[in-house]
Image (cartoon, rainbow, N blue to C red; front, side, top):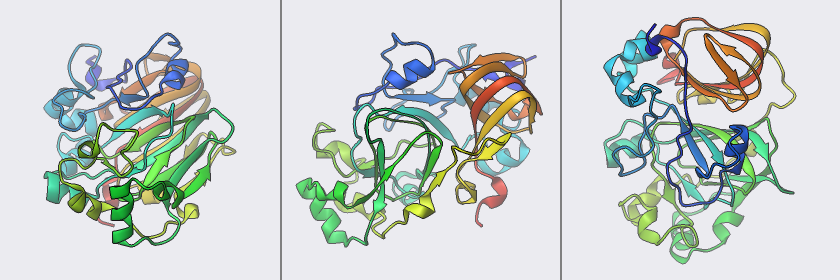
Length: 335
């Protein structure tokens, strides 16, 4: 049968980044000699900002996944998704291994992206922590208190460390998940390894560029900071609203991000011992532990796969723990 109707294993896809990391990705994939960098874009139909091909995933037969999906969206994505999004998967999945603390940054909303980039998608994110190293693995998410616009502008202009200090620090361990709405400033600390789901864009407003980017011009997507800072969510954020602790949950399918994420993406952790079936859906699988099969495809720790909707009800066998990532729930859009 065509690969377009069966799960497809994928090789690593690590476009160049400005920050250090990647050892955890290499260890997960059992490729300890790899030097591919801190991000692996899994089943990506998204390019890096301003690039033509960097970031795109290839199928084993040499086609870009983007082109295969665009040529037959119903087979890959299902009729309901294709009616809403056409040949757009509406999903980007990454493995991200922070070998250093990332800068404080944020991402545009759908409305901001439409206005300034002519793009339907902004960049809401969800982080699933799958590994940590170091004594205090931490992420930073949202301002602790409301911050006036002129204060944010001054922090950015002066590259003031108060930006980081103003964020909620959250200690994390494997099994924790973080929902990151568009606009909310954030940073990922050194030693945090995540499976990241996001809307399929590469739009980042880098608020803390000094020491990370070549200069300020690289941080505002060509908009200038006067305009770019309009996308920053300056209202205080509650950690309890954004963070879930799921490590102790070991059911066959553990929802990881809650219904708030449904208009953007969905994620579950699968715990298979024996046999389990996944309902038909386009999806991306990242195998965290064990070995077995996904449909006809043998998998093991570190395997990554893309599953077309047309694969139908896919049976998973063996002893496997995996993260299953899916696109937005179409019925949740506009709700």
